[in-house]
Length: 108
Image 1 (cartoon, helix red, strand yellow):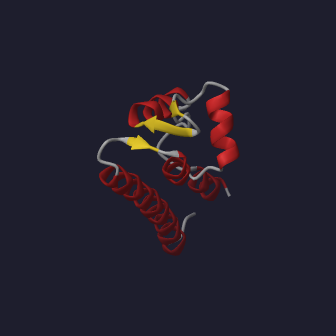
Image 2 (tube, rainbow, N blue to C red; image 1 turned 135 degrees about the vertical axis):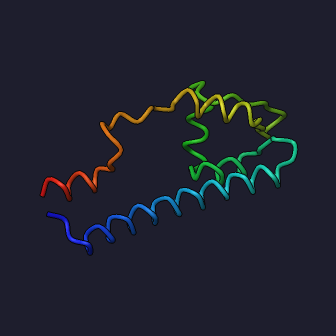
């Protein structure tokens, strides 16, 4: 049986995860606001996606991420980024509304 303290702990964990997610969304929206033209260079995109230059190069080289190139400078549009994120998006498959941590707490 769940105690009030364990319920509060679960709610706190959920709220912390929501807060962390929302902070990430704010980072992306501020990046978009600062990037009025919707065009990213390597540094801006690596920062937005929190990836390394080697991984970004791998995404480009394998054709997963569209780009434009002028000389040795690469540019990515918001549409390129959105297309990439949509292509590798997976829907949630958990049954019900409970998070895995909550399921463990219920089942012991």
